Structures are given as structure tokens and as C-alpha cells.
Image 1 (tube, rainbow, N blue to C red):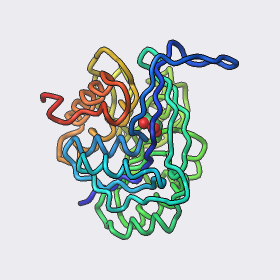
Image 2: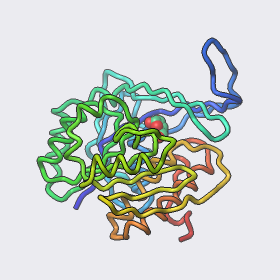
Image 3: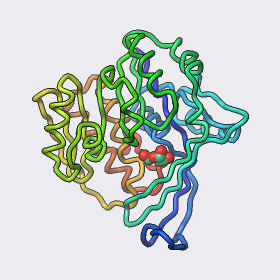
Image 4: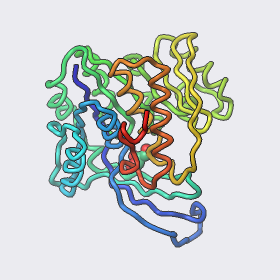
Amino acid sequence: MKVLNFGSLNYDHVYQMDHFVAPKETQSSLGYARGFGGKGLNQSIALAKAGVEVYHAGKVGADGQDFIDYLRKYGVRTDYLKKADDEATGHAIIQVCKGENCIILYGGSNQSITPQEIDDVLCHFERGDVLLIQNEISSMAYLIEKAHGKGMKIAFNVAPANEKIWGYPLELIDTFIVNEVEGAFLAGGDASDISGVKKALQEKYPQKEIVLTLGGDGSSYLHGAEEISQPAYPTDVVDTTAAGDTFTGYYLAMILQGRGVKEALDIASRAASYTCQGAGAAQSIPSLSDLHL
Ligand code: RIB
């Protein structure tokens, strides 16, 4: 069984802010750093650091050799990662203020992935292999249809949640991984009413496995009427960027390694908490040994 993460890669430009910039305001940042990110890349790093061999497919621009080197450094397979000559790698402008963030995305090469490029990757995978996706690349509907047609199991981290997802064949997804805002978008309801969001998810997707992350309020696994809950591990938060990606990668890694749902939620929660203790995205993701299990 092989694991494929077909997802985004971004240069993250991270600005430390006193407060988030408001309309008509110009504000100096308190600090700046550039790092590797993209929900796709972060989740591949988390999977690899949790001990799973993962193939990362996607597209960087001519300026993107650094990403290939970075992924390889952590043992991520880059056999199917494409480099385009005529466009720039995606990037994100991230404001960080009191641990919270605001993100502006520029898709770049993440948004020029074609059906043909998807076919070129999927021909290396087969029934029973696992596909992890997020919502930061192009040709998503095609990717889901083709992977399902091959008999791959599909986990979809619905992030960012936007109108595009209504054009995807969501009925072909096996596992949804969402936070409360994404869950409310996916199923309806008010993100501040957690029990309402859970009920809506259970009613709208009774056959699907759903992993719901709730920040400081922990996480839940929903499958039909079944619910397994996990408290969060409180920590001093420096930057929450990539905490959700860490959770997704670790949860999936633990399930793929044969752990039960409860244990997978527990370890993923520890890993996400660790990520919150550092600034930046991929660079903050822990190795299994960092968690002292
Ligand atoms: O989830 C965090 C990530 O979202 C950042 O690394 C940024 O690149 C965006 O994709």
C-alpha cells in the first residue's frame, strides 16, 4: 500500500504583527521570515516525520528546487513532483498576531496542475493505495474521480473551505478532515455551535469518516452515530500556522500504522500542540521522537 499526497507547496512569507492590518491602514511588521509551507507540503512533512513513506505530487515553479531538496531531506518521495519552467511557485503572505494568523494565498504553479499531469502521477498507484488531498491545487474534481476509479482510498482535508468544493464529487471521499469552520461550511450550521456542526456533519455524511479539529477544544472522530473525542494538549502558543496540517498528517500516519482512532487522535493532538510552540509552518512540525510518547 502506497501513500500519495497530491498537494500545494508555498513559500510562506511570515510577518509578526502587533495587530492584523485593517482596511486603509499601513503597518510595520515586528519581524519577518520566509519558510517552506503549503498545506500539501506541511502534511507530507508531518506524515514523513511520523514515520510514513509518502509520495508528494504537485508542481513548483522554476524557482522551486529548494522544495524538492527540503522534502527529500525529510524522506518524502519526490518522484512525481513536477517543476514548471514558465511560472512561479505558489506563495502565502501570513500575518501572525498573538499566535493567530491571517493568510493570503497566491496559487502560482499549484493552480496550473492539469488532468494530464494527474494521469501521469496516478498511473503509478493502484487499488488500496491512499490519496491525501487539500483544497489548494487545480483539477481537484478530476483527481478525486480518477483516484476513486482506481480504487484508491481518499482523505480530504477541506482546507481552505470555499465554493469550489461544490464542484467536486464529494460522495467519493472516504474521510473528511475539517476544523469547525470548514465543518460548518461542509455541512451547514454555525461554527460557534460545535454540537450543531457535529450533528449536521453526521446527518449529511452518515457513511463518511469525519475528523473534526477544534483547536483548544480538542478533536472528534465521527462515523455515523459513533463519536470518539480527544481533549487538546494546552501549550504556550507562539504560532498556530500548520497545526492543522500537523494534526492531519499525524492522524493519517497513525491510522496507516495500525493504531486505533483514539490513539491516533491523541498522538495527532500532541503533535499539533508541539507545532504551535514554534514560528512558521513546516519547520515547526515535530518528529515522533520529539513527542516523547
Ligand atoms: O496551513 C498552513 C499553510 O496554509 C501555510 O503553510 C500556507 O502556505 C497555506 O497553505
